[in-house]
Length: 192
Image (tube, rainbow, N blue to C red; front, side):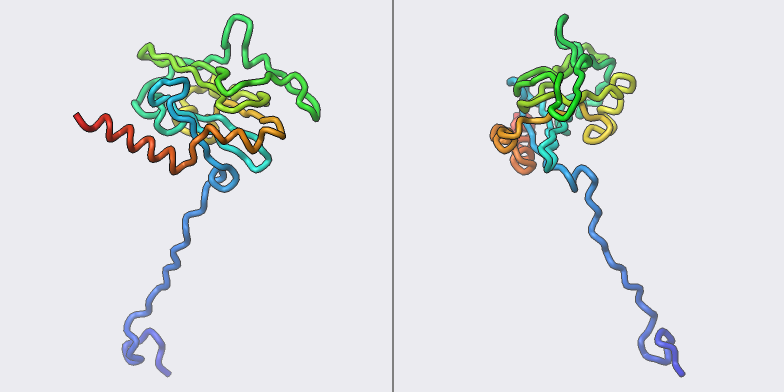
């Protein structure tokens, strides 16, 4: 009896079926919708990314085009001390109704990032809601902000009011709109 892969069978070498599985989406891509705020407070390239979960929780991160992530800067320190009387680290949330959470507006500062070149960046909330938590890990290891901005390097978690959860995205950009803004910005700086 002839084997299927033998030359006598007239089939030549056996072919290995390579099933190309589509890349498995990351946890963030699977469960969160990415929204963007470009040029926050009118500062060019200071873009923020808001990861919105289906349960309406929003995770505030830096967008890929933010100067802290783009230009190879070294983060010297991060501070959640917004003013002499306001520290985001003092936020204490308790209970079902999230008592004690600080209420944030779209432009409320969350933290300040200090770079070794003297540059300072203020990160804003971009969404109205209650501050659920801040990421204290980036205080001890600021490089997380650059290495894993969408996961371990997030800045804060904000819970919008239930009645506002649909409208919070009105002033934000989708992934495609954001990419178009970045391309336009790049083309504007590339042309003399």
